[in-house]
Length: 306
Image (cartoon, rainbow, N blue to C red):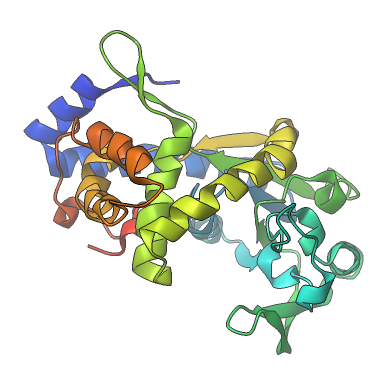
């Protein structure tokens, strides 16, 4: 695994920011293409794609789909989020009484099992569609067919949990894990930007831009998100056939401007000190204009199109 330092990242950002962004994306595209080739070579019908929050699962699923279709396959993508339980009354609770949306038991496990068995054995199934505006199951459904040339990509944080993928024959199922797996160090080998901190910054910007979530709310929810990862996601990483590192070395410079603006909004709150630490970290990185971003980049999932 490549070791990234503030110095090497800043050198590339100063001397050729556009080339740095393109190469960062190209390196990730190459890694995803190898994962897609594994699916092809092993003749899998279903690819389970899991990973923690803000890892880039949605974009990665789309990239895998594109590579498979270039090779003559039909690729279809579904999200485990569509299998959320029908009513909030059925959800497990956190210790503070709030709904535990990170729990695998927030999903309709019997329905997932039924649909997957039908897809594997009969090649078709009726899948639910979840309406997040009402937080209930939609009246609409999705009729999914898998013929001989179709690969189904199933994206969701719990994709590697045996409660979802463990009961299916390995002959049919590929298991992939995507996350930020690289840190950034200083010249003394001290971590400047951790894996989790990079994902938090992605989530901070994405949720503000696309979900109208205030920065303070992202801070407030992050503890619950991390607890859910420790309990429901990280223990099953070893089940993956392939692991993808979605870290792009250009991203601290790209995300800095928007993240810094959002971090300033929590001044005077309980998150002020933590936000100041993030600001001090981002101030160490050379800025890269968002116009340098390419439309196919995974980072558009968090920053939007250039």
